[in-house]
Image (cartoon, rainbow, N blue to C red; front, top):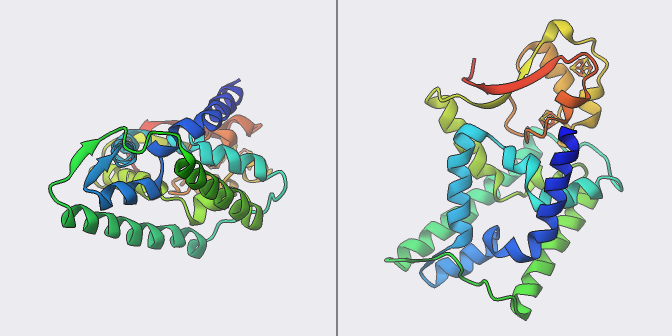
Length: 236
Ligand code: SF4
Ligand code: SF4
């Protein structure tokens, strides 16, 4: 039931994406920053960072429209796309992108807030939307399960920063909990993880913290031995 609700939310979010795109766009942030504007995307990303201090990456697993598209593309390419190097790529890209935005904000200071900046759905908007969707589609097709989340996502670093702040300050946040004694090493959790994480190995080690985990709870609901739980708690 929980996974049906999650998938329903993801599909709804994907259907709404043509309307919400300007609130989640890295390009529109750059465009607005170049004109001295703090737009809706910048505000939403800031809110996501704050939310992740408690909610970790629940947004990625339950609401991200780009994630939904990737989950459906993985039918065509279900390969695992998860390694330190592949995951590192998004932080390098993010750092360059975010540094450029900060540069533009400083250059155009004082900046003014305009939540609805670029909201008009016109031809320019549709072209940008089409380009971004094509990148998500093709990149995931070439890489594998949520390849975009692992290597290119411009939003994930904000949430990982939020998680890191929570752990550093010992703030309880949403996380998985392992029950290693209940695990029979069947490997089902790793097979169904949309992020391609080796969650079975993590459960056995008793440490299920991983910044790539999107808190979708597929592993929790799929485990036949109920060896994975979840809750809001501090880092152990
Ligand atoms: S599905 Fe459950 S029992 Fe099987 S490996 Fe994963 S945690 Fe262990
Ligand atoms: S480890 Fe579990 S909760 Fe995390 S992404 Fe994989 S299936 Fe989802």
